[in-house]
Length: 172
Image 1 (spheres, helix red, strand yellow):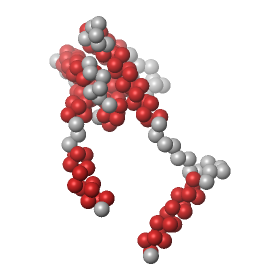
Image 2 (spheres, one colour):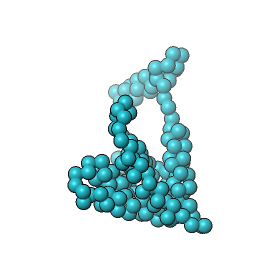
Image 3 (cartoon, one colour):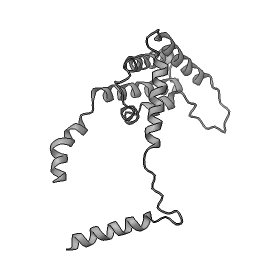
Image 4 (cartoon, helix red, strand yellow):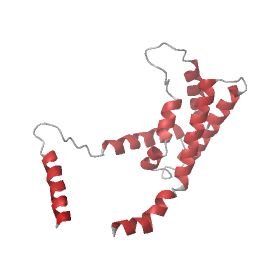
């Protein structure tokens, strides 16, 4: 019965995400592409290409952030946007090696410019982004944490008993 409900109602919904999630995934892909262009620097033509691509992606994100209720924390997290922002705004090189941070500074400047240009009296997209990121962190913190192997914990016994009951029920 549960499988029938899933097949009838949830399978189609799962395969077709909301339009906002698709947009967020596209933004994340654009950000990662701009990062790859910038870090590889395979040709001189890509000097402004990565910048334009990153700025376009950030402007699309800012449009979504204008309305506070458009994006849920779950959608933001599951779309890959948080990881893409972390990749773009972080030096992903080995921390032990001193490297030139000029590329990172350039990306951060593009980020700051995109958010400061689109700021007005009514909306502050940087603040909206930070609020959404905090909401993502808060939702992740609320996930249950099961410690099966801690001394004195009876949860492991409960899991074992549940499996035994299910096995006995299946046998009968």
